[in-house]
Length: 300
Image (cartoon, rainbow, N blue to C red; front, top):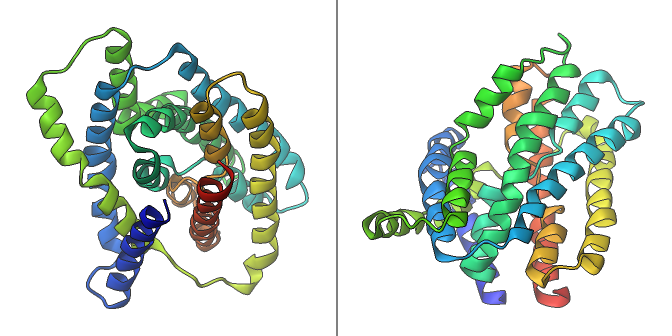
């Protein structure tokens, strides 16, 4: 397991070094991210759901994630009530999880295809949390105020290629409908690129600069995020009446980095805290990687 983590860190470091040397730039990451989310990740989902039988109990995972998103929203509004409106909105937009980009390559390296099934279900709940709860709250606390457009939210969900792939692949799996072998073989070849591309992209987006004005609110947010994740995740791990992978998915999932979409929302709603959001996203990647390493090697 230490060897897998070493390989992961080396590839992430490679992405960062390529950026420092000027071989790649952060703007190149936009193209890479589109390839991941629209091609390699959906291909990996197809292969994953083709290879395993989804248990009925796994449907509870996205439900629990959505409930956690609602809990985070309610407690977040109370916890950050003394912050200014825009800062409050920034923190609430960061309530989602980075599953497809961060968790998938790590989980695939550590737990294999079986682990990806559980985290795929986790990502379904995350998609609804990010494009539903986080998007609505980001709009509400923006300078222009709430611009709630149910149709727009549904469009965002519908345009999420990974989410649509999850849903279609789940239906096919439950219905015991098998895709043709050529489709699976081609998807398998494409999906092999998901892990290295995702890790290189993480390295490209790493940034260790922290503006002094953001240190206090950033520490407050990190305390809230990981504190709540542990407060909810640990009881779920120890007391849920399901198998260990199910319980591990919930615990690890609630400690994953912030969703990358928060930065996109911030730009759309004209927030002036984009640098803070980007910095927090980077820091949570490092923190979550350390947490995952500790849990994988010493606890679970």
